[in-house]
Length: 516
Picture 1 (cartoon, helix red, strand yellow):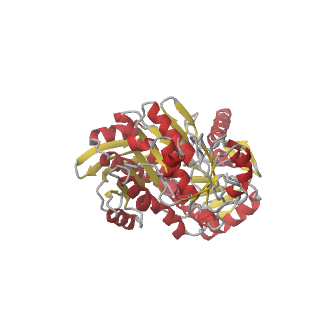
Picture 2 (tube, helix red, strand yellow; picture 1 turned 180 degrees about the vertical axis):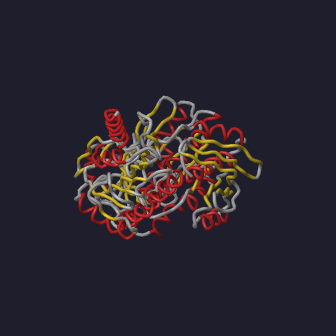
Picture 3 (tube, one colour; picture 1 turned 90 degrees about the vertical axis):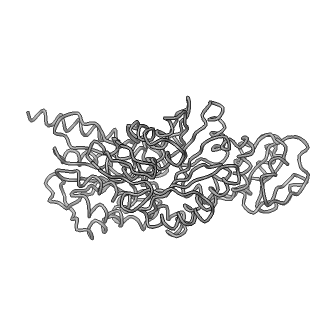
């Protein structure tokens, strides 16, 4: 591809040096992936600056540099100087891969909690009318591709490549999760969106964003930048916004002011898409979805009230995209479950506690998970949880308070401690538990609720909770969800909460059999 074809998508740039006479051979933001005759994008980062790797890129044969500041001592090598190299690369990546999303129905989902569940639900809904691709926290899948995701929203070159592959395989619908990091870093710029979905906002990722206001500013970019820009790419974008979140009204107003058609949904507030005749249980839920065009019955094996809220978000997405209510309902029912999102671990014997694995790793997410299960629990509600190391310290006591207020018995344990001392992390969580009235105990099996024990060994913590629980009790193992690893120091070790829970349930069943 000629350089001038790539530069045509950049509204603001300065060209220095001698433009390459031939075509650009490839785009790269990693100097180790530069090809002879290619373009190297020098991206600024938190721990490294791409400008420092310009010599390595030139040695690899780069014919052009995308930079935010002019590089010295590069001779006549072409430099494209831009105010934001990340945004420029995203736009160039879209052009490089033929702007595939212009020929697709593309949905982007953002929010603190619920992104993954809503994305999976929308995937299931869209599948009623044809092949669909999914890009998210858990997996990337389309056609014959199905692999674990490496990050919630891939970098632009990988992202646009995925969309291009989808089109080549006859997949012209896609749903993607768009994280706050991705929005702040322009990863999804250049994606032509038909629909943007906002689920909610609560405290998370403040180690990156600094404060809640900045975090929200990143989220709202989906509706104030990406959707309006999609209109300039030939789309008629729409927004689906949850009004149960305090920021929903504001976001809906801002989107409307920018010419975006807004659909709203809610469980507890007036909205275009809402639920009536709700029935909830540990095996799922059912409701009647009401919308301006009529109503339809929706059933799901997903557990809990907030999953009905997620269901409404997916229903609103399908309806906004012109699908019939009956087809939307059919698609919602087809989804058997979402990995690590209140995922039920099968019990090997009658009389076992109900065990759920959930990705909740913030106080709001813990309140959602525990608050959902508490009214459905006939016995005691247990929670096994911790907090990730090298992340936002401020949320730790808040997580403890959430568990202390809602769980009868808790096991405070290690999550992904990374380079922090697990005991020090638990020391920061414990005050929240205590403030909520939960008291430390030596043994979980005979502890009087509300109480908690500390067990830094996560496998042992899971086992202690399941062995102490009985019929009618519910155990929530929170924090890691679908993850099949634990990060200790800088080492990633295999660890899966679901596997550990299954082992503990089998051990418990064997104990009960031996008691005869």
